[in-house]
Length: 516
Image (cartoon, rainbow, N blue to C red; front, side):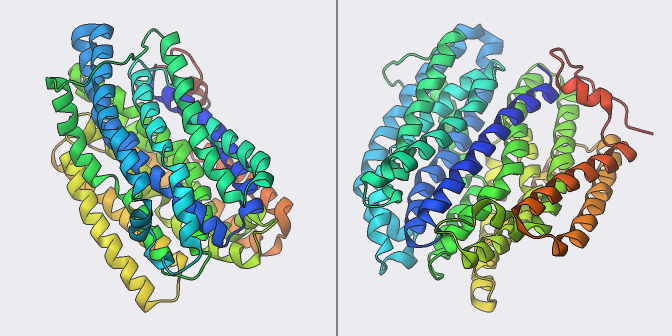
């Protein structure tokens, strides 16, 4: 499967998941609102999600996929599956006691995660919801392992579809269980854990259907497990600057008045649409491809694929960032302003979304640059860069909270600036080592993408003050996308042969020549 087709497959299913996610968040905003109950649930939900992104999707995937690819290359499918069983046994040996300990210690964990809530009635609710949500980490970590196996044999569709189950389970739980429980927060928390179980069973079935079922075995300290731990530990410590930053965002937001945590959550959910569709798709498809090509000595092909992945990312991320910045508050109103979610909630979330939009291209670039390290089994360098960016994020948050009145928007802005620092540092190191050189096509199309995005942004900036209501906002989104497409065709960014190639089963791997 070509890189373009792999990205299209993952991105397509991720888009469906994001649509379902917006429906989920509309239900949550209507039932939970943007106040204390919503703050408690989002703090509780943030905890297993943080460890999921940090360990399961971050550290484990970055370490597991290259080793799995190496085992496939050297010993075939049987050797790779044997390694997956060893990894699963080691994973469970750590995860089971970890989940049990944190459920018991939830009051102390919440004091670290949300210190500003300790004297608030929300704190007791956050502890209850955290204990209900946290077992989700066990199931979703197993999902990460089975997903790594399926991605390792270039079967991306089932893995990309799993988040849809999460969204559907939460929607069903909130609508079905809220009348039976003290409030909707309990229903949403139950839906989270049930979703993890459903996602795991879904991928177990998919893996068996592809002949790569991962059975259970007793834990053993083998050379392959040792290598997995060695590679995963730096990533687990560094974690990815965006996830660490988002975790710290909750700490800072808990020190602000009620509603700040919810504002950041809703803003992040909108910003995650392009990041999830583009950034996650690039990272998921690029890592196994680079690992295999570098293992086979195909360095030029790996370099070309990394450039094409970054080009594809900027093609969608730059216009998305401009549109989200210009239309931040109208989008939040269109999506969430109903039920318990009111005018002040929309203003807070809109300001935070505009700040997150500034960092969106950087977050996507990080997804395209880090596989250049992970595919070479270098997980330490991104760790050091991430830690430096996290330090900058902490300093910026302290400054914005003490010296400005930006509130939740200041927290989002600090994350965006840290994201840019992370992306630039990763690029500089890769270039210095000769592991990545931006080719002529990336430069040529880069300025054209920037020009098309600026043209679309100017149109939205001029029209937006004269539009009112959700229908008008939706019309602006459609018009902006159409205008960007027209600019793209006029400037030679979008070409019919390349769009068609995305959907061909045997799309060419060599990149076409840059436009004249």
